[in-house]
Image (cartoon, rainbow, N blue to C red; front, side, top):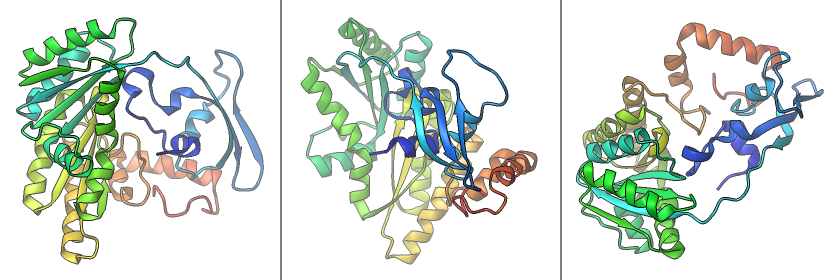
Length: 319
C-alpha cells in the first residue's frame, strides 16, 4: 500500500526491485514548492545531463524535509510478462542465505527473491489459512518473468537444493504463483494481527549476512520475550524485522522499543544500514547520527538549513 509521493519521499523499494530497481532510478524530474513558497523544477528531458548538482536525487528520500513535491516526471518500462514463482523450504536461515548468495552470484536475474522466517509463515497461516509449511525455518520465494521462466526456476531450484533446501516446489501456472505471492504480501498484515500493534524495522545488510541477521533477530526475540517476524527482500539484503506487541501493556511496549533498537544495532554491526527504504522519520533519528557520524550529520543539517532555514518542513523528522 503506497502512493507515488510516499515512494518519492522515502526513496522506497518493493518486491521486484531486485530486478527493476528502486524509486530513485525512475524519477527523472520534480516540481517542488520550497519553504519560502517558490516553485523549483529539477531534472531534464535529455537522456544524459550533469549540469550542476543532482537536485532530483537530493529530494528523493528527503522525507518532505526539503520541499513539497507537487509534480513528478517518471520513467516507465513495458509491463513485464507473467512471472512464475518457486518456493523453497530451508531448515535454517543460514542455508536460505547460502541459496540467495548462490542465486545472485550465479548471474541469475529473478524478478523477485523474497524470504519469510518461521514466525512470519505461521502468522500468515493464522490469518489466511493458506497452509504454508510451518516446519520450515525459512521460506524462500523466487520468481522469473523471463521468456522461459520454467527453465530459470529449474536452475534456481537446483541451487536451492545444493544449499540444503529440504523441499523445492515450482509453481506450474500463474494461479499457483499468485497464491505464493499473496502469502508474502500478507506478511505485515498477518504480523500486525498477532498482537494488534507492530514496530516495523527495515534494516538492510549485505546479502552474505542475511542469515546472521535472521538468527540475531531470533535471539533478540527470545531475550525480550516477544514475537518478532522477519520477511525480507532477500535479493538486495533488505530485511523487515517486525516487532509484535500490545501497545496497552507498558512493559511490553518498553521491551518492544528496546528490541527495535537492538535490531538496528545488529544491522550496523553486520555492515548494514538502519533503513533500506522506509526512511528515518522519528523512531530512527538517534540511529541516523550513529550511522552517519558527526561530520555526516553536520553536512546533512547544513543542507536542511539552506532549503528550510525556519524549520517548517516536516519538523521533528530526521534530525
